[in-house]
Length: 228
Picture (cartoon, rainbow, N blue to C red):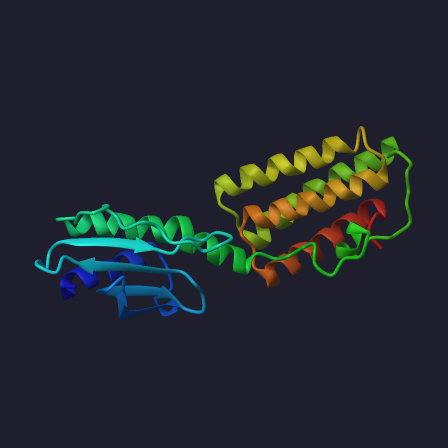
């Protein structure tokens, strides 16, 4: 592969704000042909491009997809060659955005369901006491204030984007509305799923996920004593 074409792949990594140190480049034999290979370190994901044996400017390419079996694509174009390096670059971008990015997000996402017993509320240190009573009017007022403060703390701590905050706001509104129709035990499960949804929306890593849980425990304990 020509150096200028290799350099173009590196530039794409930089343009898309990937950490170049997470990748390695090498030459390997792929399907009986030498290929320029870019691997995501410590993962099964890789992308490769092969030259037409009779031309330095014609390529095909393939990659390993993020999925349960980490299967590989067919060569693109099939049974032919790209005569423009930018076609290879487009395939490389697709691999980065639709596979590498999702893989990295999955690695960094907190597992809020981990270390739980049969009681899903255990992840948040909630009381195991099953309170099936409905919220009183006074408690709903306190809960509304708690949700408002929680919303502010999320903005202040994590600085979500406008699109992320719109999704978070929708989840918090649903959480608040559910207190009108659910008892306290049922509402705890909605709180759990809401926090998982918020963490996923912002692609929080494990450390940030713990921070989110701490803030939630602090805010909602003060409000309605649901979390012990």
